[in-house]
Picture: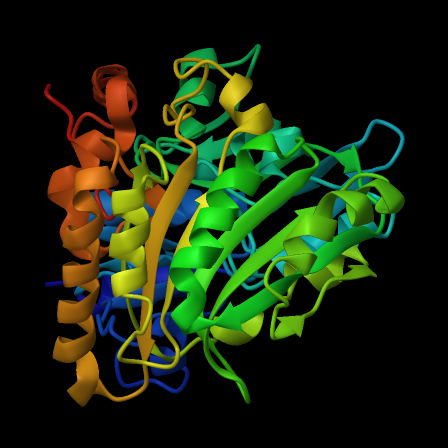
Length: 449
């Protein structure tokens, strides 16, 4: 139990806001994207700087408190919020500085993708950053960072130049290719296992208007659309990133759609996408030339905060006839807010060695995920059961391992497979930087010392 005087002194030492149970703002501060997460920290410290993060870590160590770290609060597993401990809230740390000449950017971990993209696109620059604009940049990057530009420019973590991090022993370290190189390796795919990242530096690339959007077909056509996609996707150039999803489209109904982003010359993109747009006369065609920032918000309406959410995900070996049949069998979800998704991988991200960064899953053609969302808590059992059934139907076609950013809370026993063949090296790194497992509100890499 925390002494009231200790809590008072700690809170007075912070420049940023703090919240305790029962106070105005507490419930809003502990709420995250997934309404199914209902945890109650003893203290929420909304840090304004790296110095305040150090104060938080020191206070938690002195009082043996469980710590969670919130960036964007978008993780499906809800690891940002703990019960009875200290929640380190980075959401107001939104500093960002673009160097348009050097094509780099220094950004703080409270930024979400939309804020980051707005600043970099002011200079006609961008880097790989997810596909939903309210996702936090830090958690996305530390887990790998899939996004529309990954086939052209690699994952978010592949574009990380350096990061500042507060470790469990209250040091502020810089990790880069020339400083604390082992830590830099582990941060790029090892999640939040080694400390609290307070600043990230990225490499940027020229990205102008893109050809983006989607075509939609009636859900009854799912098998035919998947067969077309299986033949179309493998020949895609690096400039083209695609996804296929079974979902419900407002004012249209249940559909199967192919979404894409082409980041090369628009005329070449129009020619490349012509077969996709012509196949079987789609019911809806939303492809257009648009700013990259607009494309990055295209999927936002399907992932609003405040719904109950549950996710299952794994990489696929291939899009075999059996996988197509299994996917099609579950194309009609019990909730209109749910989608089954295939993300195309390959390209630049696959040309990085699996051991060059902690993110090892470089050689799979697709990532499969089920994004179940619903409004009423009474519907939870039905939606979770359907998601698990869908996942089990797809399981024979899955590769070993999963994308750590898509793991739900119950998947912690599978963390070893999520970190793949790099797990042993990550354990050694955990032994060095966090031997007591102080940072364990994550998909945990357990130390052995």
